[in-house]
Image (tube, rainbow, N blue to C red; front, side, top):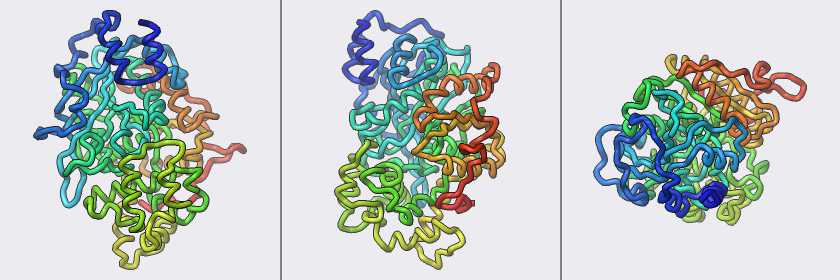
Amino acid sequence: MRKLIAFCSLLLVNSACKTSLSSTKEDEPLAASSAFLPSNPCSDAAQTLYGPPGTLPESKGAIIKCTFDEEVSATDLDARARAVGYEGDAFTSGARIYRVLYRTERPTQPQPIPGYSVATVYIPTTPRAAKLPVIAVGRGSRGQAAACPPSLNSPEAATVQPDFLAMALPLVGGGYAAIAPDYAGYANFGAQDNPPSGYAVAADVGRSLLDGGRALRQLLPSAFTNDVVLVGHSQGGHSVLSSLALASSYGVDGNIAAVVTYAPLWINQEAFGAIFAVANQYPIATTPNIPNGAAIWYHYTAGYLYDGPEHALDPFKPELRDQIKAFVNTACWTPKQPQLEAMGTTVRDLFTTEFQWAVTPKAIADIIPCMGNHTCQKWVARYKSERPHLDAAAAKVPLLLAYGTEDIALVPVRMACAIDRLRQDKANLSLCIQPGASHSGIVRKRATYVNDWIASLTLGGPSPAACPGSDKGLVDDSGAPVACTRLPSNHGDD
């Protein structure tokens, strides 16, 4: 039995291992307070969560379907986390792992429509306290295809699943309950009135995350305080900050008490238009996902959400539109993207010349007017909306930004832009700068710190010691502050 657990932990798979593990007496549920046992029987077949949802309930966050996946002891959960590079304290809790399908909303135009998302739910077998904050987890970039979301743990997304597990498992291993939405658009993929998930579309991912918090409360109605905590990495860092900015207008079930954002994609999203000016620096063969795949995922999914499926491909060259659609519908984040390489050398080979000429000048220099160009006006307005300002209430929420100085996905001059913007919004910002940590490594190195920081704000725990280098902020090798200097400028969405 222990050999089977170890094998499953290393493979990090969901299907055959779950069946084998769940059927043994050794893994029967541990004793727990009734507050941490779901109110829902969670007896739906797992595959039904990804098909047609049926008639959607009226209330946001309402649980439509629920399935139990497995129970994992603290020892075995710890082993899974260390298998993906976790470096923190030994886990104090095991986990009961569920998946739910819940109701949310999509920001289509001219008016929003109902939506739905699958999420993975982690319930601690040894809760950190009698009542816990609700924690909603924003996962990083994975691709927009049906096979890509974290709840499926599919081979197609094996490259990025370890980053997700390195963030999610330490939370439940530290005694917290957490929900990790896939985001709306993945379940029942391609169905009518179910646009694909908007890549870095603030109004879309923000709704999914806030409603995920509502769903967790519904699943465990007696387990939580009024506090809500948002935790996200990379694109998920953008998601949690989008949720924070959206909370006042969209609503949140509870009070956002803390936000943790690891290496967030909180840059001027006019970068999606400025990329054409520097495309030769980023060949598709060597930088397939950032920025090339991201530019495609953003423009296609934002166009689909806001203009409808018939216009999702408008920015792309007509002769490549079928291939672009196939890429979005089938490709997850992988070290190489052969579908893109077959279409061109740089991203400029994929988009129409008219689109590039419309958006690039305005994206790289905000003082250049759109001069009545409808394409420019429409897309530049969208770029700006993807990094919304924090209102006064959101700016008061304690916000921890964790970042590694060896991040090559969001390099220091880009992260300086994110920090500058948060300071411009007068955010209640704390930095955790980790010398030598990479884009993924910051999650693995600082998960225990994050657990303790959350406890200090929501459970009366002591404040953790400051991270190394945080007193200086983001500095270069000479000790001088790192400045936001690369294209696009940082003021384009002021």
